[in-house]
Length: 404
Image (cartoon, rainbow, N blue to C red; front, side):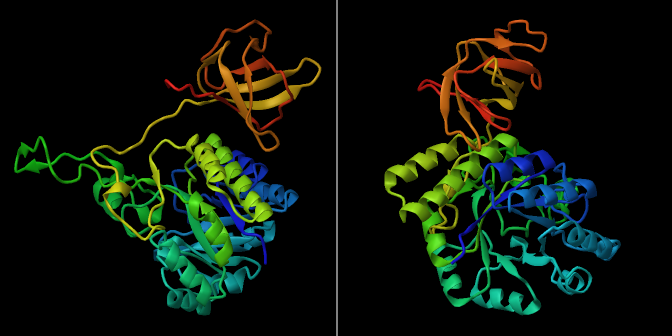
């Protein structure tokens, strides 16, 4: 049996490389056209070529989203685009329009066709039907419970992909028109304004209801499926998908590495005991800025899975620096500042090859080798004396104190 795939998002070239270096077996990215998440940086043709070549060095795969709801005018140039993707070594396209399958088969037969969660595939008959249309993989709707996923997997031989982490939709995935109605930004064509996360006031005619008993927001908690990873492996799911093409490099690195370690440990040990699962949950929480839940996986959908009155969004300042390089002679790391920290702060370092090693910042210098006490200029390049070796791509975060 093939080892389950860990699939990570990336909104630009730098983040795609981070995802692969931190342990993703595959990444999914958007081009400048035909892609949801159009407000992400996304990839030009040259960048798609570069990430395809980079991925091959790590034996990783690259999937490109071609998942907007197509209008007639959108088909202009699609044949040439698909041929280019095949030529540069892209492995698959993620699509929401079945009309694309015969086009892909005719123009770029080397590309796999993965059916997007936009189609809300939630039963085995739908999976088989999509297979007959020519789909190579089905991304199940996020509304499926774990019991339903296991039942579908037992009845089909089609590779299944399941979301395990990230944002959820307040409606059936991909079926929302709130953003279009309220902002003229079409969620089904890449422009979602996340209207479900806004704060709303309730009026009775022209009078504000000061203490409404209904929702002030429609936002769902984010998904965290760590407790279900073992069951997904055992039932034969092909790919575990992380949501977040709009997320930061820190989110990508931390979440990908945590699930990578979790998956590897399950394969090595056979299972995770509650203590180890709690450890991984704590690691995942370090990258979250909204409350998380198991979504529909438990088979229940009650009020505890939604956020009432507030949108739940927050900003974490734990991530403070990105390592650009290391001088082994001076034992100095070259870092790019991301958030405020100072001499005397305790820092935790993590990366592709380093697991949560801590040190206290003693000496900081700028690029003129002037001593710095407070790092408070985002993107500034500084040098920090290290008690251990660190490398390019590692990240610094502040150690949380109990009173934080």
